[in-house]
Length: 131
Image: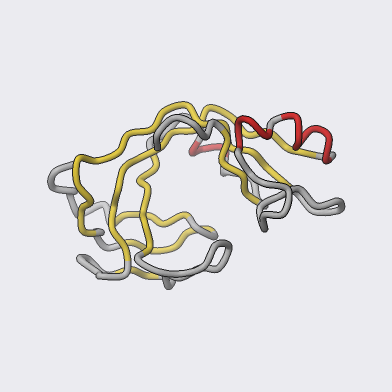
């Protein structure tokens, strides 16, 4: 969230309805890169994760070659040996960062349910104090 990384790499496309929308950033308290550490449902105030800020994405780039992926290396900051690096025959998508904001202090998570991969929906009945 310091502005250095301008493209977030994923193996899947960001759903179109989330382009331009604020997406809360949830930081799991432990886990390994590329391995989900949160369950399909996270209870309010869980010690497994904290809310640390938000991001909005302006568009999604699909990478179909190593050359295209490497051309954007200064934007996505993914080293060639990373599990997020481009691999021939596999989809690679760059979510172009539009805006980020770090919260002054991490907040407890509200009730959340997984809707897709690492995307969770926050319970509509809750407000997020301090956000």
